[in-house]
Image (cartoon, rainbow, N blue to C red; front, side):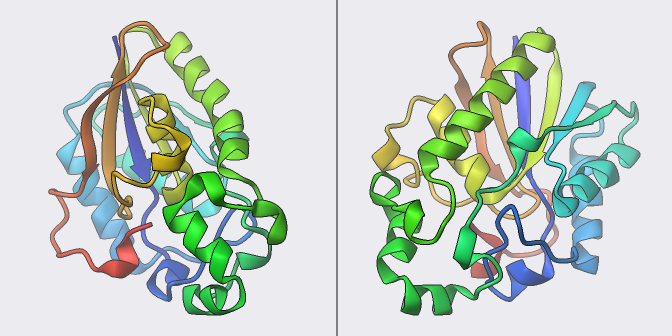
Length: 217
């Protein structure tokens, strides 16, 4: 049995400002985020991870490195481009309110109706595009780490889409479990490398603060 710990990166300046980052945008992690990564690491420090896989985008890469340094047994880290965030095209760097005003249909569908989201309008990736590039990476991770614990550090929207897909959720319902918080942990397990079971969704019980709306994607 392989157990996968999916972790969303720490909170960034653009997260705080309610801006879309996407695969092409990035902003510095907040100073508080490093404390929260350490809180997460303390929460899972007794877990023996065989490997950490992370998106190469800086906010995810730094999250993976920071957590790994605090673990009792420091696992190797591999960066996989397939774990990057959605390419959000014209929306990247824009505040949510501005996207809602300029692209109201795309804004609503991206958040609430994945099956209706027309990514070509903003020049980005669709939900199916992201799932189709992430799934081979996750299946390979499971195949290469049988009977191990592995950590996957990635991004809120991409992880939400991929994990729900792995759980067999229809495209139209991918957002129904709710968003993922910064520095959250979601745990899935697989015994055959094909089917997945949800053990924990969006766990933030180890963080020493209350979440607000800028935490969730």
